Every structure is written in C-alpha cells, then in structure tokens.
Amino acid sequence: MTSPANKASNLDSALAHLADVVDQRRDAFKAGKADPKTSYTALLFSKGDDGILKKIGEEATEAVMAAKDSRGANLAAEQQKLLVGEMADLWFHCMIALSQFHLRPEDVIKELERRLGTSGIEEKAARKAFGKD
Image (cartoon, rainbow, N blue to C red; front, top):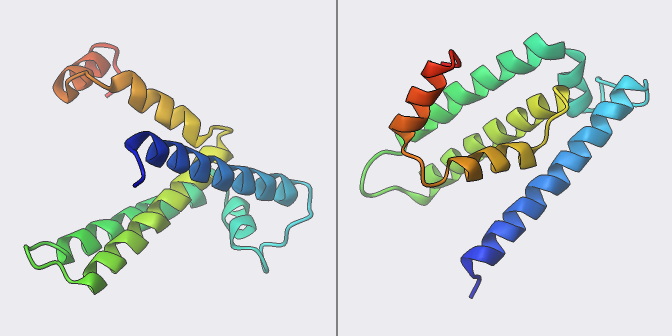
C-alpha cells in the first residue's frame, strides 16, 4: 500500500518532472528551436503573458463546468474522468504560467506548506492587511 508520504513524494516528483519538460520547451521556443505550429507548448509561449493567462481563465471555466456537471451522490465514472481531465488541463496551463514567470510548482507547494495549520480566514485577513487581496 502506498503511504501518504510516498504519495506526496510521487506527486512532487511528477510535478517537478513536468515542470522540467515545460521549462525545456519554453527555453527551446525562446531560442527559436520549437515551432508553435508543431508544439502546443511553444504555441502557448508564443502568445505571451496575456495569452497564457487567458487560456488559464478558459480552462478554469471548463473545470468549473465539469465540476458542476459532476455533482451528486452517484458520480458516474465518465463524469469523474471528465472532471479529472479538465483539472489536469487547468493544472497544466497553470504550470505554463509558472514557467513563463520563472517559477516552479515547488514554489506553490512551499507556499501551501507555509499555510498548513493556518486558518484560511486568518490567511485571507493577513493578506488584506498587507494589501494583497
């Protein structure tokens, strides 16, 4: 059986590996070695900040719609698959944005770990106090 620690390690490893691939493709695009006509990742990077962020909005909307369609006690396997697929699309596009701004999933995980044990209400109040929300 997989322990929670092993699951976290596998998740960290998978996200780090995907981030490495995204970063490599970003660098290849910027060096003129990746064609947006043949590489979806290069196509995303070719759209710049605004295009990448717009795509995250589109993917977030699709994830919300899939979640709404998945509500109910009798969640069908097909609905679960659709929701997971939309969430994967959203995560992927968020990783593109992280790479665009020279950040990594490890930065997000570190921030989530910092917040562990802190009430979400307290966290939001602290951000408001510093003008971040």
